[in-house]
Amino acid sequence: MKIIILGAGIIGVSTAWHLLEQGHEVTVVERQPDAALETSFANAAQISVSYCEPWANRDAPLKALKWMFRNDAPLLFRPTLDWQQWRWGLQFLGQCNDTAFERNVQQLVALGAYSHTALKDVVRATGIEYQRLEHGIAHYYTDQKSFDTAGDAAALMRKYGVSRRVVGRDELLRIEPAFRPFAHRIVGGTYTASDESGDARVFTQALAKACIARGAEFLYNHDVVRLNKLGDAIDSIAIRARSTGAGGQNDQENLRHLKADQFVAACGSYTAPLLRTVGVDLPIYPGKGYSATFPILRPEAAPLVSTIDDELKIAISRLGNQLRVAGTIEVGGYDLSLDSALARARCQMLSDRIETVLPGVCDTRNEAQGGTPNYWTGLRPATPTNIPYIGQTPVGKLWINAGHGTLGWTHGAGSGKALAELICGRQPDMNFGFYGNTPSRNPRLAPATAAG
Image (cartoon, rainbow, N blue to C red; front, top):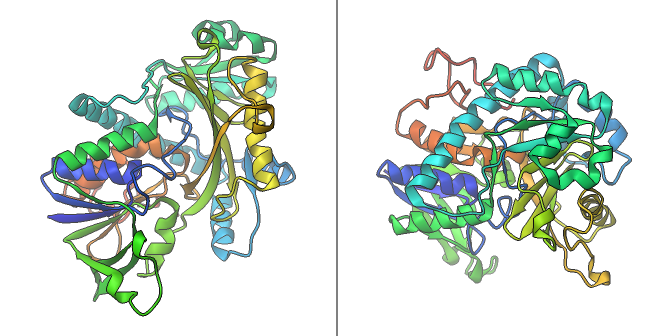
């Protein structure tokens, strides 16, 4: 089959790779000049099968209400006049209970384990190098009350096959000695040896090149103008090269119409508005995440174990001679600015925290101090459950692979493999509620309520 994929982030490129593995003809359309230049560009770098808890839990509503007045809040809701945001928020509140939380965790762990295996298979097949560190992921707590709940979270993960264990402060510091300067604040933590870290952008761009070497066509610098629907199915897509611009009397002449046997929407946060144009209305809403990438000044004192800071809900990962710190989610629309007072405060929080936890290890100086901190922001395509939509839409020939929230890197390889399997008429070997699936088609699965 000829298959067109819309989007060249980790999700779209992984889908392309696995479709090529199945012998299909693949074209990828991407508005940026290379792969992984948006949401996949500078994320937290963690392959975190065991740290996949949904944002929605029984404590989330009260916390979110308190955090609305903090510029550095881990999860910040910024109300707008967008009714899609309000709909998303109401569905999110509907997931803030223990029953939904455990059901969602089970789905996320199943996809994460499947994806981790798929990633290892791709790495073996391609030899891609991407600053990979297989030292596990640690999670430290600075508050005793929060640490007291760590055992319950670890037990839930173990219930679904992930070996996440509670460790005391001394053992945590043996696992990662780099945090000894901050030891007086740490009360304990958890650790999963099977998790890992690496640079999602480097991996995705290398995988895109491997796809091209196998015959895939990548149309970079092209916008998807519309999906052309004929009857109950997508007939073609209209795209425009960014160099030609938009508008004017020659606008239609600048469009190219591409036909295919199947189409895959993997456009991250922009998937939902695109699909609404053909009647597929899904609650995927952007969560603005931030990261900073700092040059390491003292390599011997920098951590090798990727770590989660529970107090600020940020992740810290070593990427060669740099340290990536990422976190915070801001639910407030499609704004990508870094120059607002709010954005500057959230970026500064990342710098300040690294200087507190790992004093003098990185160059965290701002521009005024002579430094060059590399701040970045991207939109995380979030569903109310944090479970992505993977599967066939009600519109013929149109598939979706989107809604991965903060777990796109963790779930990317497996999501691509799973969708390729579904397109080929096979059922992926995991207990996951694929979009468009029904119990009659797969009795192992509960009804497909993956994200609403």
